[in-house]
Length: 184
Image (cartoon, rainbow, N blue to C red; front, side, top):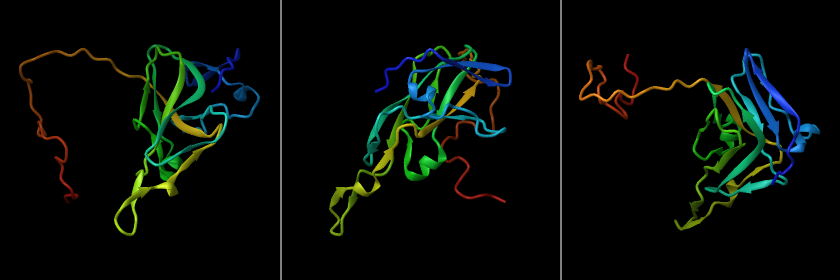
């Protein structure tokens, strides 16, 4: 959809951390799309836009990969998480895998899998399934579609053992281990 390769490079600065960004869509450079910035002094993430040429309608249950028109060059000690925007989630638009992870050595365009999480079928008055056309969602060109959070992941080496030296109170209790109600 977007083939313009910008020569201009922006440096995203967060304290002493610098990330280079190349805009691959000229609409960032001519002011048509909002350049990613932190919206407030305490904002944890910045928003990336949908690099599409015309409005894109997603029917319930449909997902599509959307280019953001941005390439990143991060220090190899960083990665970034792609997170859904709460305003879009309240409309039913979320990320297809609910969160995304961009490794520090990836330098291609950042892409987002957008998913209309509304059910594709609903039941009519007789209980028969029919297409759920009332929950279609439209993404506009340049609309902010995800938040990008830079993180410093810790890498670990796995030490294979026959059993653990200590056990916790929780042990192997997994899903639902804390119950359904608050205990006072």
